[in-house]
Every structure is written in C-alpha cells, then in structure tokens.
Length: 233
Ligand code: PGA
Image (spheres, rainbow, N blue to C red):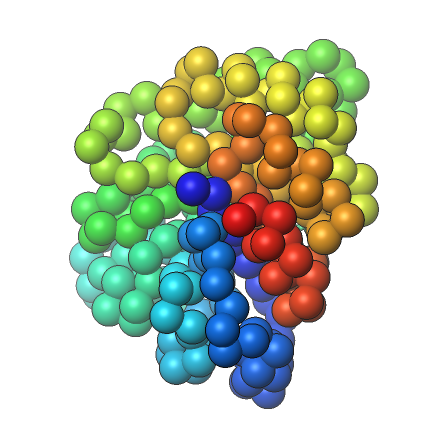
C-alpha cells in the first residue's frame, strides 16, 4: 500500500476547503492511504468534509508533553482529539527556523506516545548534494530514529530541499539511490517529496522503494492531487 499525503502548508481558507472536497467525486476509490494535512484552524472543517477512506494529519506538533503555558503550541494529544492520525515532523521549512535534533526528538516522542504516526522528513540541500555529502547528511538526520519503538508506525519522507516547491524533481536514479540507503539504515515506508505532480507521479510511484508521496503545491489542486493518488493506487 502506498501513501499520498497532502501538505497544504499555509494555504487556503474555509471556502478553499469546501471547494476542494466538492471536487472529489463521491465514488472516489483508492487503494492508497490518503492523508490531508491542512493548516490547524481548518482541521475541523476538513474532518467534516473528509471522505471515509481519507485520513487527516497535522503539519507540526508541540515539543511540550503536558498542557500548560505554551502560547501558540498544539500538543500531540490535541491533534488526536481533533481527529488527526498523522503528523509531519522535521519538514525542511521548519528546520530552517532552527528546529534542532533535540526538539525533533521531543516531537517524535510526543507523537508516538499520543498514538500519531510521524511522517519524519529528511533531505539534503543542493550545496550538500553538489559536495557529494547528500547521504552523510541524510544519515545524520536519521540517527534520531534509531531508538524509535519498532512496534510503532513511522513513515520517512525523503524530500531533497532543492526539489521542494521548485519544479525540479529528483531523478529516478537519485531517488532510488537515496531510498535504498535509507531503507538499509531503517526499514520503514519511505515517501518521496519535492515537486511531485500528476505528470511525474507515475514514474516516481513505480520505483520499488517509493512507498508514496508527500505533496505540497500540487495538493492544492484537487484534480492534480487525485491524479497522483490514482498513480499510487
Ligand atoms: P512541493 O512540496 O510538492 O510543493 O515541492 C513538498 C513538501 O514540501 O512537502
């Protein structure tokens, strides 16, 4: 089974959510696990419209494990309470603002303890790739998962930073090589993310080690997104 996860990032309004789901045919079927990760204020409206076989996720989670004076934070327990099953952790757009391994370890632990499935993002910059350091960089990011309980679900998303939102997708060879290295280090489902669209989804999904896609820009267009889901089915 493949996963297709829509990361809406900081986009949309209530009207967008309504029209997005209106565009999903009532009889839409897929063998893929489809997850929608909207901005937090829209979790409940997404849940209202969510087709039965879709799931909901969040784009981030607090590193704090107890309720209290943590202005602006949203706990893993709250995400569960709001109907989420998945949470994206360590996206490069958040790491960019200084999310350290120490902080990410707390987020992972909180997600795991609450019963959320983390979608843990890793990926190198263009600089690292050009210097031949792509794997050593990703390997260092994966260290955090070493002690993750083997009996708890966990998904890894390989998202080369240079391919996110740029239209530049990694080549099949790049993806194959990186995914097989990741797989050897940690045997979990591995998604690819970075400018996935309907036109390249088939090719990416056909790669044996690709267990699905984390989709940003193309997930804002329901037709595009559903074509990606079809490619994963
Ligand atoms: P993109 O984003 O599909 O727009 O490149 C992917 C992501 O950041 O998860």
